[in-house]
Image 1 (cartoon, one colour):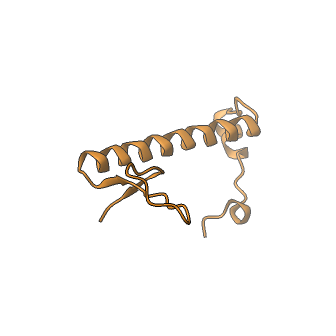
Image 2: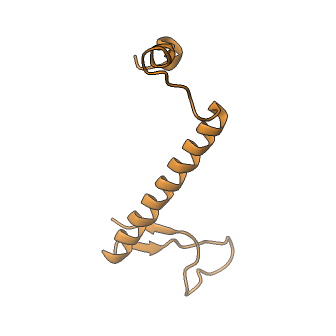
Length: 82
């Protein structure tokens, strides 16, 4: 199992052999890592949606309101077609 809680990684060897020390606080590093991956995932999702749109496999989702006829111009989020 690759679980840091079970492995309990230790940077002591890097400190000892390489005279290495962290250059930022753990919280700052985690925050930057989270922002990086969030931005990267969002960029990938946008690219995927653009590719689907270019391929004609993306259409607006219909928004249904109970008791009202379906609008001529669909509104709402985009959804992937089959």
